[in-house]
Length: 108
Image (cartoon, rainbow, N blue to C red; front, side, top):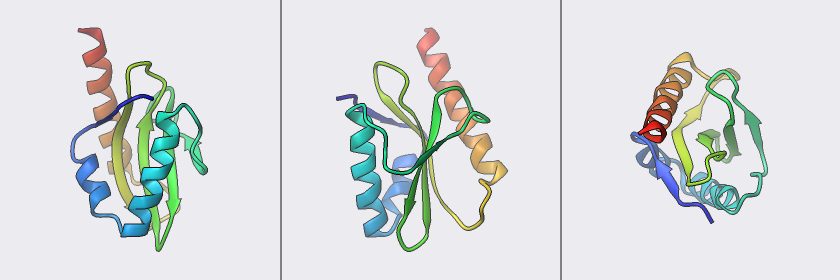
């Protein structure tokens, strides 16, 4: 099972989700750690290769953007609640910046 590396404030953001959403995110993230797909996800190629969005529907729309293609860990790039159909530019930009940090760390 891969460890989870939380980037920026993503862990704190998940802790602010409602209890049911947190529980569902935790269960789905565990599946990812075990090498399985979460129940509801979509690829996020605009952020980077291999980046996915885990989607949770529990009293609102909750998202976790992660990268699980690296052999050493699952990287949680960003977590947030959604109010519209499209992912906000700010959320995409933040995930892109955090992905760059992951990639820079691998080059060292």
